[in-house]
Image (cartoon, rainbow, N blue to C red):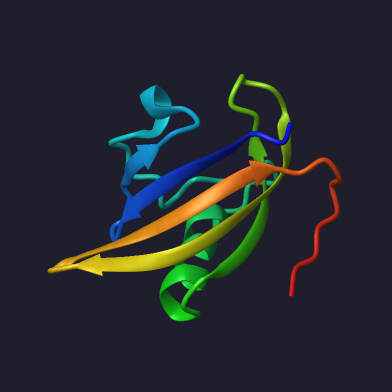
Amino acid sequence: MGEEYIFIYDDSGTNLVNAGNPTVFEGRNLISLKDKNGLYMIIVRIFEVALNQGGGWVDFFYPLTDGGPATFKSAYVMSATHGKLTCVIGMGYYKQEQWVFWF
C-alpha cells in the first residue's frame, strides 16, 4: 500500500498511460469499469471531477496492482487540453486507512 502512480485518459475513456499497470490498462476503453460493489462510477466520477469541476480528489475501491483485493484508493485528477485533444490526468495512491466519504 502507499504506491503512487500517474494515469491519463483521453476524453472517450481510453487509458493512454497507466504507470501502475501499463500492460493491463493502456489502450483499453475503461469508461464502464466497475468498482468492487459493481458501480460504474470510477472513470465516470473521475471525468466529472476533472472536466466539470476543474479537478479535485476522487475516492474509490480498486484492486491492488499486484492483483490483490480491492482497496481504498484516492486520486487527484484534472483535465488538460492540447489542440483538439482533451485528456484527464491523475495521480492515484492506495490509502492506509479505508474511510470513505461520498458527498
